[in-house]
Length: 459
Ligand SMILES: [Zn+2]
Image 1 (spheres, rainbow, N blue to C red):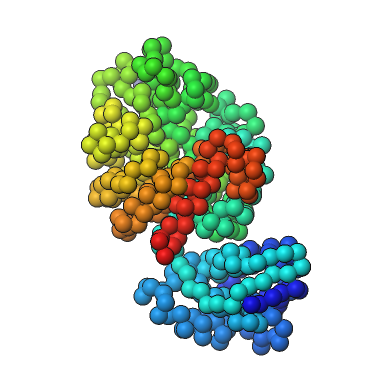
Image 2 (spheres, rainbow, N blue to C red; image 1 turned 90 degrees about the vertical axis):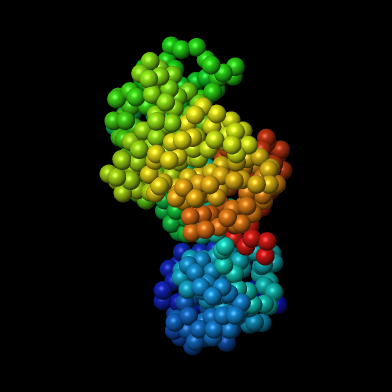
């Protein structure tokens, strides 16, 4: 047992930025005081120390890296893997890249027994690495009042769970300059977005902004930004509801006024987040091919046309990786999926008609054992990112099935929240009142289960 009552010297390798040891710095500051830094090239001190770096930074690091060679995959530790040794007097964290040191520090947090005034670490050697390269989390960001919760999620809650990508669903909740008429109340500012990006980068997280395109243009019968400002762009403007309970409305994919506005909005979000990836939503688009113009085409052609137009801007013009939800590309009947997670309106042949460099987020929230769309979409040539939600069985079954169908086209596993941010943060922090809010306990449990499998499988 290594028992620390004062901050040990921190010896950080030359290639390791300060952010990579951030979790350890925060832990010591909280319990035993600010860490004192020294160069890793110097001789090691007699008192307890933490040495973190790449093999070339110090002989103790190269020695540990060599000793764990037989425990790790033949391909090596990768960007995010690490080895830790805790002999009685010090801690050594060896990795092949800065992210590995970061996850090594997270692992120390997992095994540390802390009280104010002491940190105890059990003596052991650990070699650990992720099975799936991307562990995602989907976040609904409906108002800037949620910024404090977003900050906790990006700096503490999600990094502890090894999340390295966060899809932030912004929709019209941004201070758009090109079309201020579509803004929602309490929308995020450009500075808020910059702040999210900075915090995410310091925690080895990529932010992927999202704006729902085509579908989800209304919620519970109320039009959102675009259709509120331009009701004439509604695919079913003036038409009676087809479904007993109104479904989210779509914009008209044939109206030439839509795409110029949408390109401006997406462009602003890409700039605000300095984004290399952008999620266009496109889920649950039920009202498709209903207006006089669209009814001359077919649902699959209309859907594919929308995807191609968005792709021409996002990837073609901006050079940004595009993501969409997968439900409209799946034949619900053939796969045995519900009409929400698969299509019953004839849109699914669009899967054959759209660019294959789009990442498909294949969401399923039921507890079935098999999710045949995961291999199917990969077989068409897409990269696929399975996404689960709010029960342990759903997350475990989906993440396990993803691992069974793990080819180079499997992106990873994504957890999703679909709840408000403030109780979500409380739930992750174990607050009893927050955990009573609808879905929160389930989301917390499912997120932990799914992300754990994405990192270590059933190891
Ligand atoms: Zn139309």
